[in-house]
Image (tube, rainbow, N blue to C red; front, side):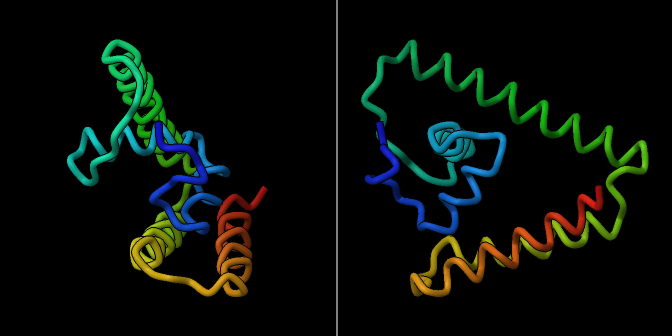
Amino acid sequence: MAEINDSNFNNIIKEIIKKSLFTERQIQIILNQKNLSEFNFTISKGAYFRQVGQSREKLMGLFYSIILLRGLGILLPDDIDVISRLAEQVSVIKDSDVFPEREEQVMNVIDKLVRQACGM
């Protein structure tokens, strides 16, 4: 099992995972299943495939939630644009070395934009 300390994720990605609906292991499993990255797990095959199923169900729930929120007008086109731009920035950040003193600033900007998009 890849523990947080042994993680291949940088601190910003780890913080985003903590605030997401997914665990770090679930993200690793999804990346494995989508052939986007390869992680080694020291768990039984049965436990791994049980977690694959749990990860798949959670991902499907996320997609249904997005469809529902968009369909009901809760998630607006501008919100989708903000999310897309943030995702593009995270894509750049995930493979970058960010100075530790800048990590908090980056997370503060992400938090601010997410809170703004929620608007509740």
